[in-house]
Length: 159
Image (cartoon, rainbow, N blue to C red; front, side, top):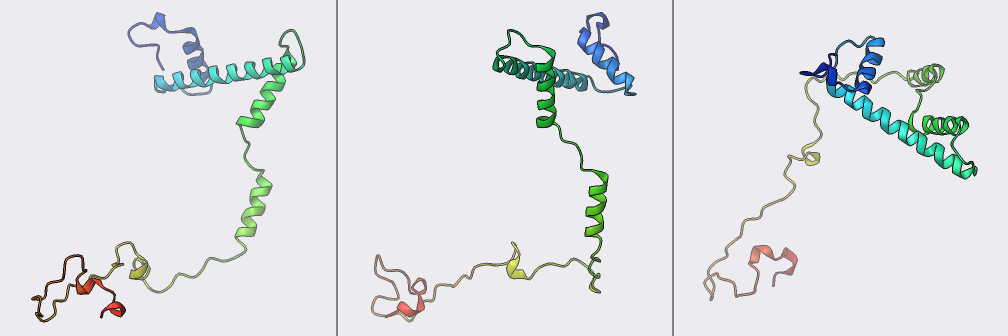
């Protein structure tokens, strides 16, 4: 993590502080956009906490925000924004419950097991009935205008 390219003395103070915080946690090299994202997150979080503290102070009819309002706002943010992972004992109990039942045996068939063709998206789900031309009658096998061809009429409706 180096200072801003071209002009290291023009690097903002907050940018340098965030880079120092990352270095103190063992992160020696990262993309500069990471520091910008962390700055944006910390700014947004701080503004939200202070706005909540102001709301709490106004609700309590205090003339100004005090440390208790800020603590309450932080506690509300922690409960609202961040969740902790489940306890280890709970996860172990869940794993023990799940692992009580053995896995099903692997069948002797090898290869990819596909569902029947009628359940696949690539299967044919329609039937094409070619138009059947009957013997040439008095109209030469043609249908009258407005009349459907004989193959389009359901079999029970033919007269």
